Image 1 (spheres, rainbow, N blue to C red):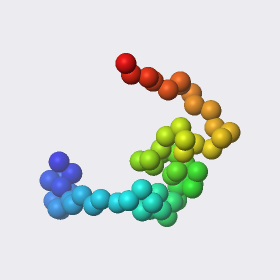
Image 2: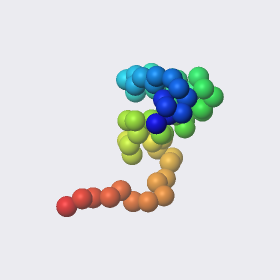
Image 3: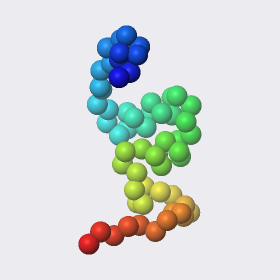
Length: 60
C-alpha cells in the first residue's frame, strides 16, 4: 500500500535486536525507552524499579 502511495519500492530489512535498538536511539529515542519497546522486551528486560501497569497474563 505505501509503495503505491509513494510510487517507490519498499523492501523489508531484517535487523537484529541490537541494530533495531541502536537505530531507534540514533533517531532520537532515549536508550531506556528503546530498550523497553524493543522486540526482546519482557518483564526481565525492565529495570528493577519499573512497575507494570497490568499483571502478566497466564494462558491455560
